[in-house]
Structure formats: structure tokens, C-alpha cells
Length: 227
Image (tube, rainbow, N blue to C red; front, side, top):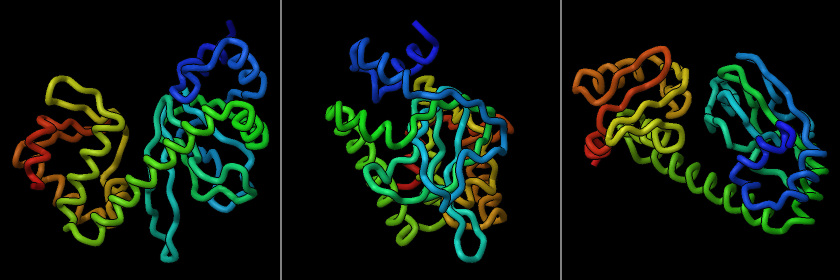
């Protein structure tokens, strides 16, 4: 089997497809390698494709009127993006930037729409993923309106741990080159404020921070911190 076949088979969305369907899928799939800081697409550009991550990390974000970046998601191997806009002609809803060298598999949107029409079970899975993303964004909006910055940071770290963390009992390593500015752009605050919050969390021995990522010493203790 080809590399594309093996990679697509590992994507959760396609895990239950039979061999014939996977072969049909690989025939409409293209492979691209992107380097750090490269843009996969920009907000407002004509939407041409849906992407599946084989390796690397992708950041999706919107730019507000004042020029500030609002991060929507960090995406890693096995994830698809964008999550919206199927069966309609709308532009990309956000910008996708590569955080670490990434290998992506791309399917043109018209081909993917047709594939979903031929395989309703895939369309249902896409709808489920979309529902999960909407629920997370709704929770983040609620946090922005009701929680202080310190709590928003902790909630953001817990989500990143659940989505991308490497677990070892209660210890979790968020293997992602995330900066303090990135954390600020997730929770809607300034880098200076985030510096103080993260320093406090380090001081009370809840986290460690390095260039490679964020180490949560005990996820349960971190959850207790905001209760």
C-alpha cells in the first residue's frame, strides 16, 4: 500500500473505511510539506481544500480590528481543518500558520464534499467534530465573560493537556512550542499579565515551562486550583 493509504487509514475520521474507499480517497489526496512560520491559508482567501495533519503543529487564528491575534486552535497529527464551510462557497474563516514543520494531506473541497455525499457516515463524523469544536468555543467565550485571567490560563492549559498532552499518570507534558504571547492570544490578555500568571503557577509548583512545551506536574491539582 502507498504512504498516502497508510496515513489516511490512521486518520480517525477514515479509520472505518474499507480498502476500496481508502484507495478512492487517496486518489483525490495531495501531500504537502510546510515549514515553520509558513501559512497554509489566510483568513478571507478563497477556500480550496480541507487539510489533514500527518505531523507537525498548526495554529489557527483570527486578527481583530486592533491588530491583535485571537488564537482559535492548536492542531496536531490526526486533526483536520478547517472545521466549517462544507457544501457552501465561503472563504477560509481564519488563518492557519505552521508552528513546527508539518506534513499535511490536502483534499480539494469539491472532492471532499462529493466523498461525503457518497459516504454519509463520514459526513456524520464531520458534524460530530464540528459540534465538539463549537462546544469548546462556547465554553471559552463563557470563560472570557465570567473568569479572571488566572483562571482562564489554567482552563486553557487543561484543554491543551487533554487535546495534545503526553500523559504519565497525573503528569502531563504539552509537547508544543507555545509562547507566552500564544497563551495571551488564547485567553485574550497581554503577554505581561501572562508572564505573571505563569510565574505564579511555577512558584506554587503546578507547572514547568521550557522552549519545548509546558509540563503539568499534577493535572488534578491544577483542576483543583480553579475550583
